Image 1 (cartoon, rainbow, N blue to C red):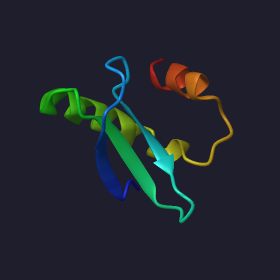
Image 2 (image 1 turned 30 degrees about the horizontal axis):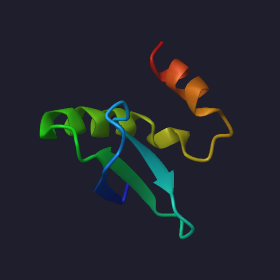
Image 3 (image 1 turned 120 degrees about the vertical axis):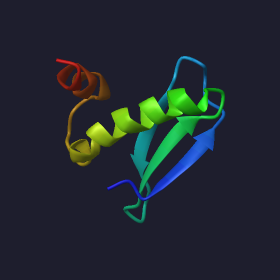
Length: 68
């Protein structure tokens, strides 16, 4: 499960992403340039990826699978 959400100054084309730090904490990074509503949509999208942590798949492959 995602344990922390942070805002970061990302390129406008990037909504957000999730990472796991060295301690195993799962962090969701959202774009500080986007609206609250857009960040909520991105967060919900990232939540759907929660079962993807630890899989050895390319991020583009994961997105393709999630959008089928």
